[in-house]
Amino acid sequence: MPRTKTKLFAGNRLQHLRKREGLTQAAMAGQIGISLSYLNQLERNHRPLPPRLLQSLCERFDLTPAWFSDTREAHTIQALRETMADPVFKNTPLPFAKMTEAANLNPDLCKAFLALYRAYSFNLERDSNTAEPLAPEPYEAVGNWVQEHKNYFHELDRAAEEFYEFLSPGEDHPEDALVRHL
Image (cartoon, rainbow, N blue to C red; front, side):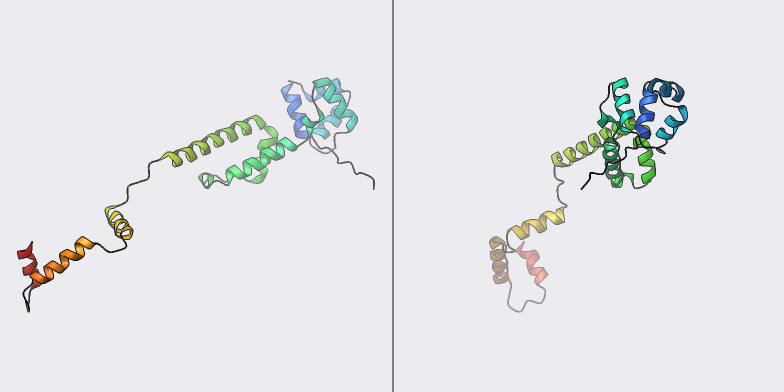
């Protein structure tokens, strides 16, 4: 079965390279030996980057072909999608098209944003792991203590039996007897 070649549309990377080098479209087109309109079509992803031109760009600007693949952008876009799914960004939704545009046009800013978010997440997790557990409310503390003792307290049970023996037979108001006892 013949192997199908994937066409490389690298307009964003090509434009990024041109701007990084401080070149106009006309200047870059002249340096790599193509017409201005052809470079414009390549940058707008209307035409794929042919292997021969890819090789020429790599040699001229000391790059590897991998630099032109969209793998980095795809990873950045995925990282942006995962980051923007965090509830902290619920009031600032960012459409997928804007994430793609940001990753393509300003990858350094995206990289800095993602690094900042990773640092934020790391600190948040670290702080939650090292924070002292909050003391329970008094009601919860008593409830926990009762549960730990399986709802049986020998001393309290003995005191209740002694109090019962202290009561006079037929006494109408046990609270008065309790006051006298205490």
